[in-house]
Image 1 (cartoon, rainbow, N blue to C red):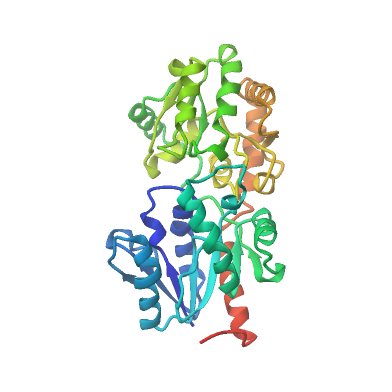
Image 2 (image 1 turned 180 degrees about the vertical axis):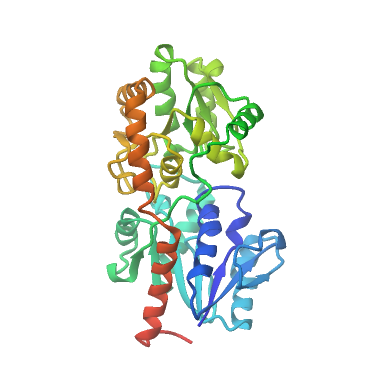
Length: 372
């Protein structure tokens, strides 16, 4: 069976979809068995993810033209029988049996204001259509599966949960010279609390800032934030100034992927105050590096963190401040949390995710419930 995979999402500079593609494509290649995997890129510079597989470059800068015109043409031309679309939306007229990966349904929760208006309108229109036209839907968590059913009415047996995992580059680092070089490169403080993610409203960064403001005079740590420019982030910067955190906050912006594991390794604790997640990959990245995690106790986050993180009501500022102080001042607790984190992260695997995807696709073919 010829299985096609749309990898245009690699052109997104950072974020969960890009990480998903960079991890799942090699895993699919490892587990494809007798099937053939064909990966479609929109630039030569993104190719090379799938050893022993066919990689096809489709030139085209406009993402809508690429997704809805150029890619379907190539799927037909290359005889693709099953096509995987890893970013919520399936184009029309693919000539293949279609499978879609849904990462979250935040576009449908009006109170979140998670994304810009045009993006929200686009996704609210096309995600339900894509789910209806898909032969199978892959949800990255049980929480996302429930949201898909709630917002679209999709049949439960059409959805397979395919958990993500932290990339293997996230691991404890024993090379002290490398850690020191990364510290100097980004001018990191000696002790710090880490937040990795965007500054968009659903990430709930203001709660973290208020909590840090309450605890900063009791601890020597600074707050390090890696987020690049985000939707509605002006309010976050205004709050930093309002709380007088400039001298104790390091805003890094974009951090090179090779350096990210070092940040988790050097941080005293990772903070994840998000009010909505489809999965919550940074939780596992931190755990796999041995970094203790304090995270919100809602949506998919408890499902991912298990009992290996301290979970907090997302809007309870004092609770966040108390837990931050508790963790950074207690070395024994940090060691216990690190050990639990290693065990929890080990339960997730990209190979398991790939096997689940491939088994689902093959099952439709075996039942003859398959378009060719």
